[in-house]
Image 1: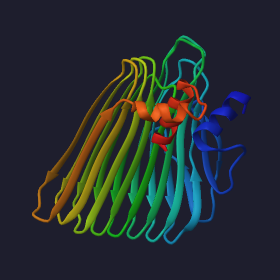
Image 2: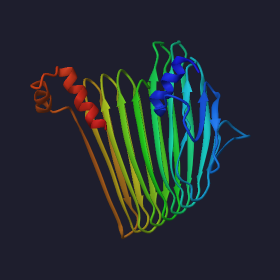
Image 3: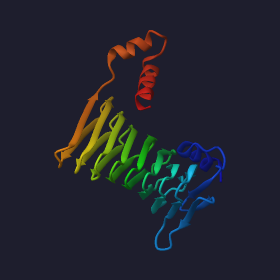
Image 4: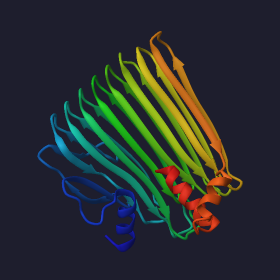
Length: 305
């Protein structure tokens, strides 16, 4: 693995070296490395690109790293990854994709991640997207996540687009069972003429199911963002969706949070707020010795955390 690939790996997965435990590294469309454990197996699909990650019931305090890195201009790929999390398991999965494009052809990574969360299982899923490179070719990512949580299960998703992605459509659909819970936290930044669309659909089918979908985004320069979410309460449940965006320069943001109550005991809330950085915030930081640019950066970084 060369210096560029190692740098991407650090950005999207926080890895400075090969991790302990189970991992699968996809590099330029091929296998860059893999390891399995007694409780976590990773198997290549035979009918299409992608892997199956099988986590045995009652697996505790283990992690899986499945980063994707692309450093070839003109490489376009689609992968299908399925996660099977056994009953009563408690694990962390770290994914993410980094693209370095120094050429004049577009490079893209599209993927469908499907999670089957077993009864009373708990999973934390961390996904980061990042792009870099001085080429004129675009860096494109279109991730799709499908989540099915069985009774008593819990899934927490942290999705972050760091920077450098010209175009992305991020789609998530989820079906939640009895006493199960889904928490999604999205952080997104666009700049230049970039485009980003987020689309969440959550069906709260189970009794006492719940979902909390929170998005924080910053749009700079002439970039454009769209945020859509729909939480559908189909049983006795609690749901909340929220989108907060900071608008800078000539950027544009559209936010459409939607809730659909299809049961008398569905309790649902939606919120959306879009605005520029408050002047008093800038002034306060500038009185402490920061330039206007440094003050903006501090506010944006704090907002996205």
